[in-house]
Image (cartoon, rainbow, N blue to C red):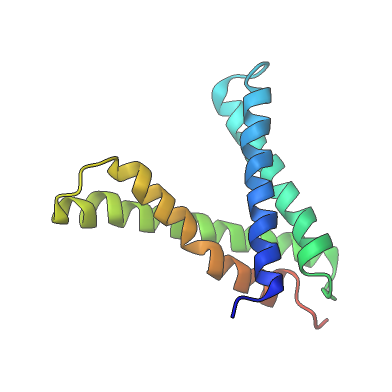
Amino acid sequence: MISRQFLAFVVAGGLAACANFGSRILLSLVLPYVAAIVIAYLIGMLTAFVLNRLLVFTEAKNELKHQAFWFTVVNLAAVAQTIVISLLFARWLFPAVGMDFHPETIAHGIGVAVPVLTSYLGHKRFTFRSTP
């Protein structure tokens, strides 16, 4: 059974992704593309941090500075997972099975989905732990 907390984590992540994407569009009106992407990514991460802190992991007992540190570490691990999985599918698995319908897009989608569970567990265990 999927826990209420995990579902809240997925919703918070979805809202953070929307904040990232939407802010990139608005920022692109006044900034170069790459600068808009970087700032939008930071807005998305900040949104995710705040939503997770306030709505998902409400029992957290560790200090804010530790939460911020571990949030960054867990997200760096998630990015690494996304890259590895995306490359494995796009450059190895899909070519091996002859799949050529948008392989990078589909591989990236899989790569983004994989760290959802590991990120949840990392944030629950380290970022927003309920024991001091």
